[in-house]
Image (cartoon, rainbow, N blue to C red; front, side, top):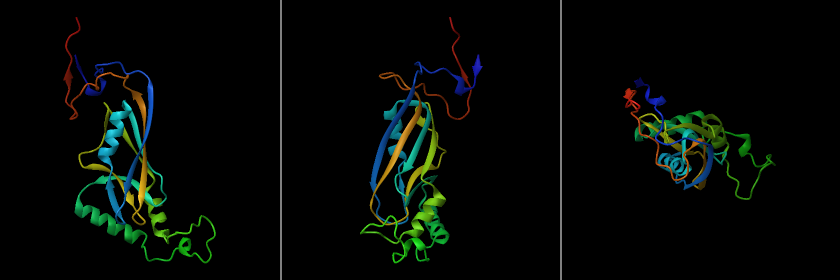
Length: 188
């Protein structure tokens, strides 16, 4: 019998819905800065026990975004230049006019209207599928937290949701990822 690899039964029963949440902490050092969180998110997925579902990566900040893109130095420079063109740091933003702004003010408030506008464009979260206990990312795709304001401590929350591996069960059956077909042994 020949079947599609996605329909091959796992080596262990997949019972129950699982939900797991962890925070990833980083201290940014520049703006903009693309902080690669991929390996950290992979670790959360592994600890979660979720074998099929979603990993949601969420920024707890209105001036730091989450995105998926390629980790290539020249592309990162291009993306930083693009962000500056979209919302120039030196442009006038009403949010930065502390003589008229009266809401959400702190003693160390910074003029960061551009960073809020950029986060609006990039977004606060990304959802990445989990299949067979692993993130389903393309060959060049990486998960980034993007610092849009100034260097500071940052937090990304990763929540996994989906079918969970029973506690103590072996990892899921490793299947070909190139679309190859699998022949199962005949049942006796």
